[in-house]
Image 1: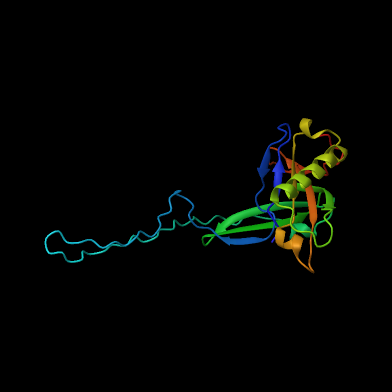
Image 2: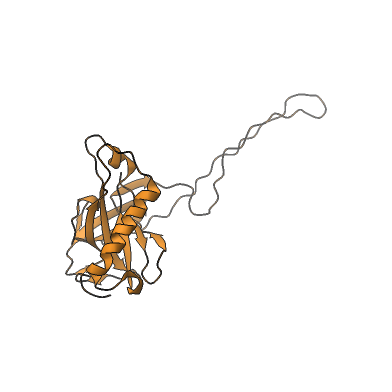
Length: 207
């Protein structure tokens, strides 16, 4: 599975932020809510003080706090795999909790209407065929460099002066090293720093 997208915040160079929801994801969520996860306690024998007999043992049962279900958001668009989107495509991301599971989807939407993100560059990591995974840090550094370099030409203003966030989607190690279905694509996208919707393309917007 591909890694989740990462983001950079405009006007604050060098800050790397996470972006929730990028691929269709369905995972079990445990240990959330109270912040306390009680493990199973060791069972120990104790000698009785007077008769030397083995004392009773106790077991602490593991407790997993439940998550309250969220209302399913009124999502719009066509559900997609972000890795299939081309440069110039716009998409929204949604996430909610259902039956103790975190559900996340991404949908393709027209750029002319309200949307959360717009892809402005699609490139490929230049590693030779058969090359091993370069590591998470190098992969993110390469994606960040490529996306940053293309930002000003797309938006019409340098990243440091923009109110937009810069984000990128990178391949996973499994996709990168797969013998047949090898995938090394990197997607760069923008969205607003205050998480409000964009309307129309950000190309040349100088936002």
